Image (cartoon, rainbow, N blue to C red; front, side, top):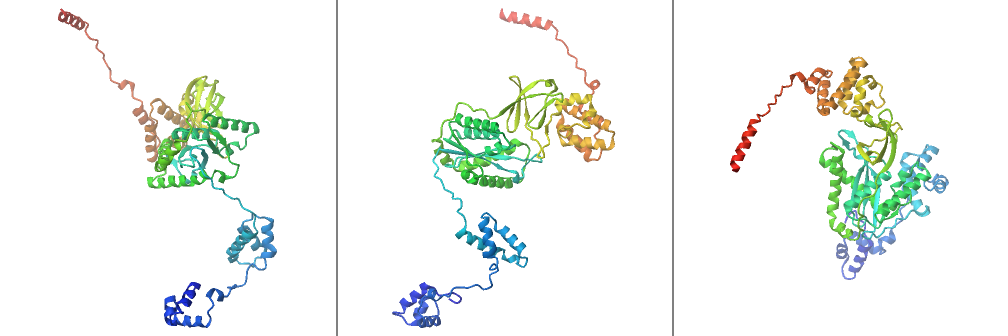
Length: 503
């Protein structure tokens, strides 16, 4: 065919056909023209023997620098990136054009294939059912999930059985801590209904950071005790060698992609509360497990039985409630009822909450807070704990350290800012505290916030008289209720009637 080179196979076919066919027929059957056939008659060598080695079509732009400068750089620093070599050569030789980058990258790649150092080799493993379980954490900030409009900075604890592909994921609000690992791992094992023989994780590496030797040893002992409770052999891959946990590292991408797709299909990345987002993640993981249910059922038969109960998945601390009606723990201030001032409390720290005990008596549960990335203390404040004292000292609101955390909803903070803009500070503080007290005493926090938002959106301050009229009924306007006592003679008549019936 025109424009196509004759191949050795066509040449051999033509020579075979020429034994019995004339030139035009043999050429047609071999797939080329008669003119080409006559040229072959004059030179019967195969095309591969006649091919002339292709030379360069332009001068080598690296001829001057390759052997004298580039190769010594690659030998002295084997890990040097090609782009770094390119920038260095452009700095040394400004006359070199930017077009040599691809040529340089290809030349370096070819040189390293022959002269470069030996590379890491990945040895694929054969996984047996029930032998190994893997744990790791993965950052989820790139998905831009929000809770009631507030960005949720979180990770996923990810557990996986490499044989069957069973997965379990748990939303973690903090870092890669032992508490997050212990809680997520136990949730996964109880959802699975059994425990593998070995558990491997590199998730403690972040928890070890900035810890002293004694703290690291304590963390290791707790991790070993956790695995021993479930009859699992604990193991950890070498720090910084992610591919040793490759059976779950690669699965991170698939899980995050599945969650991202589900968010797109849902049409919104905002959830009304954290529990709704956790249920959403559970549904995505559950659909994956449902597709491989036969393999999971096969692996369950090889798992160890679970113990009678879970083991500890929290940390404990003892704190003292200060005169600020709160305590500070892990650089976060937590408010508590003022009746506990001066008492020592025992606190159980979970990943997402704190359980507070006075002696052995449970008191209440607090959401767990986090310190700010810049090192500033965080605040978890419930205005109900301090509103009674704040009513006596309303001006304390003006410079309160945790004022931004005191307001339960954005509407209250907006109202205070609007009041300060037009009223004296003393009046603004008093009215803001009165709004908070009303929300607490009448249990109307959400409804009152809606009224405040409506007033502010209309460009006016909240009408305190109208708010009081709506949420604080006038005692004088209450209807009088008269209770009439029944006539006791009616009971005598009833007793007489019952006696007559019995006779």
